[in-house]
Amino acid sequence: MNKTSTHGAVDQSPAKVDTATALEVIERDKAQQKYYGAYIGLDVHKDSIAVALAQPGRGEAQSWGEIANKSKTVRRLVERLSRLFEGQVLLFSYEAGPCGYGLYRQLLELGHDCDVVAPSRIPSAPGDRVKTDRRDALKLARLARSGDLTPVWVPDAEQEAMRDLTRARDDLKAQQRKARQQLNAFVLRHGHHWPKERSRWTKTHYAWLESLRFAHDWQYIVLQEYIDAVRAATDRVATLATHMERALASWSLAPVVEALVALRGIDKRMGAQPRQKGVSHHDRVYAQPPSSGSPTVGI
Image (cartoon, rainbow, N blue to C red):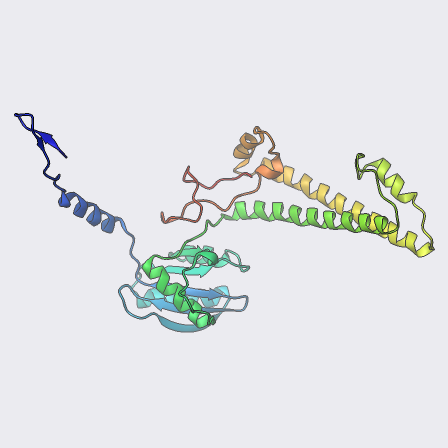
């Protein structure tokens, strides 16, 4: 920083950098960093789990073969690793996928840490195109040790149950849209169409559909089947929406949903959808963390 002398001249000497302060920050960060006895990479499939282990330092990760994807087998593996590393906390890592979060919760219950990582954010070297279960597990173990994995937010059991309910409604809504598209396509294919400016799926619209005339008797059968499919899908959507309303009343995040509903364009169905944002159980940086630092719900 430039200084002015008593004679009015400007001192152009460069400002001194306090290196002691920078070193203190580094040492403090090291003290706060969480270390693990070992880093375990798991390549999880429906029937099997490939296991690899990387110890702290720069040694090569080791493959530990495969185990059955069963609760008892996982418990035996964890007990064996705990004995090997004298009870130290271990960090397990596996990719988010169709097998869900049961393994994650089991590992936490057994006293260890676990990261469910985002597959799209796993670093990949150019030309590394060979994928096997063993190689994937080794890669996860190495990257977990170097801190290069990005965990996703894992919902608790209650939030996951609500998410299952909202996803089921979305699935039924998609089936309803498909049934309506099929009915509309059949009617249009035979030269009939409902006026664009009038509302669809009302009593008047259904009465019009049932009054249509076709050249062959079996086309009436097709028409009625399509109409019945639309009505059945609509009833299922309405039934599940009713269940969502009942479940919402006892949900721990119901007050948050009620606050969101006060915003324009958000109804209870949209507000009840947990978003995949949050923070880690051991203060790691998660994919898309919210500014508030807590799991959020909403659109």
